[in-house]
Image (cartoon, rainbow, N blue to C red; front, side, top):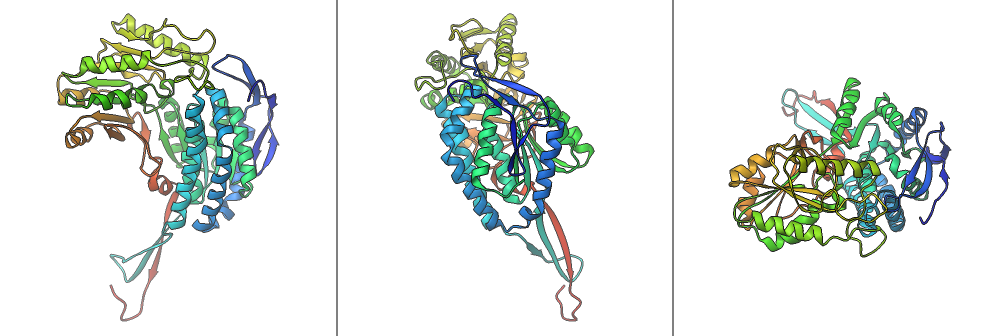
Length: 489
């Protein structure tokens, strides 16, 4: 990935490399150096139509396979993906700045693990169920079937993981799919296409087109798309929901977050110091579940501020390919300016910079923002309400447990959260009062085996777990009547 890789003009559609329909392109800029590393073609409306048509043509044969047959394909897909794990991890680091060690796991190995997880579910899922009817003699046979063509739309921050959380369960269920990586991931999108080509999935089962707004709009509006799975901003999610709802298709929306970490007065501060700051600053804060609102009760507030400041001041900003780097740049120059502006506005409203700040020293080149800790923030301040998507953490004092819950729930979002306490029962009781789809006690880690998603402005539906696979299925019922004289019922 060193240096420019030229103009990438083709998309992987229908099992072949097809030229882009139009002339729309994007320059891929390395956020650590601000250098152009590639120019890529970007999908438009005509490309969306072609990709959906390819997926539609592949659907009958793919959905007709047994779960075990689809599992064989998914395991081969996982094997090839894993063989390219370092390559795709490095490409995404070049595209958006995630330290390469982190990217190698999240974008390299985690998608392969997810494919294997859903392959196992496909092998073991019971495909039909007979129920005793309540109103007639015979049987009610329920057979969930694949929904159809799926559109998977993911952002750039965890590019491959967020795509895998959609295509792995969809493929296991028997759906075919059109993948739309973000424009910023135009290089890694081509690597995914090469992986698919090598994995030898049936043509059209998975199609990959990095697309722009026109592509995305055409994709979600296409009447042959049965389900849209989207990760991104709440505003865009609402637009997709309106479009998809108008044509009575289904949607899964994994949207924004402003997650609260509640630190209680009996928390083990050694555990908090080790595990909470990385959850707040992970991937330079470009993480939807980042615990960027830290709510501390009396007795631990000052210690929590100090441990967050120590962590922030101990970070080394630099090239994602330098093994000494602990925090890379933000994904784009525009994102850097949004984060810097949010810090400045917070300070203007009375926030106190305990570490970092808008003008803190950072590398001269690249889209860097120093990890920032703010105090003197009220729960209703913009910096505590809006998703900043950068390395900015606010610490808010709570009077007691009830006040901590109130502050945690004082947000339009409800994606994630955490509670830190020496008393697990106390922590779980408090976690159950937090309005979020997922809450950790003394830690936080989404897992492929458990449903993950949000409430309120953080979206609807769930990814991960058996629940994700089920969301790509449509139950069909067959009433079997028994008219023999001695039939039960």
